[in-house]
Image (cartoon, rainbow, N blue to C red; front, side, top):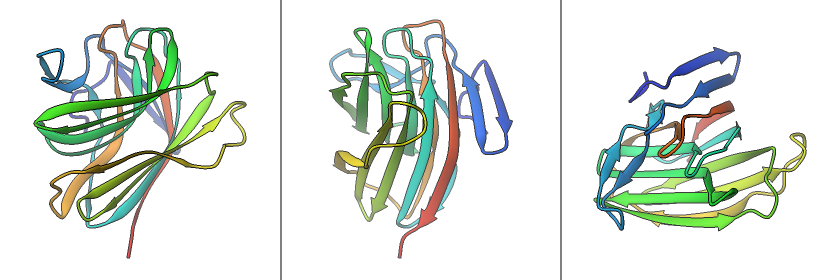
Length: 183
């Protein structure tokens, strides 16, 4: 069940097509001074250490359109990562929130057709990796985007995330979500 339902969501096999709602976002305080917790997140609970992977294709067009994965404990402790559309181009993005949001971005020279995200949780540490596809077929090797510490309990939520803070909404397709326990 979505934390905040998108305008539209359709499941076909292992693909989930979503159209985001305007003015949707996840953010807490830092720099902008506001709190938003109305982005679209489809969580599943997972215990202990794990690795989650997903492929994402988005029709990003408006400032801050975003899609990827979210790891969440509460409205004040979470991590979101993926691609975010900033100043007319796609950026790999990671926001780590522990009462306050902390944002890091890596601008992409060329807009990939799709990308894969890998989020690995080991204890209190979360590693985010991304792989890009220029043609929608082959992917680059995974590269680390972020290594973060969060006060994580044994059980957390993980799943697809998307939002349109400033735009009118956009379509995103998630596919191949896998969540596997680590030993």
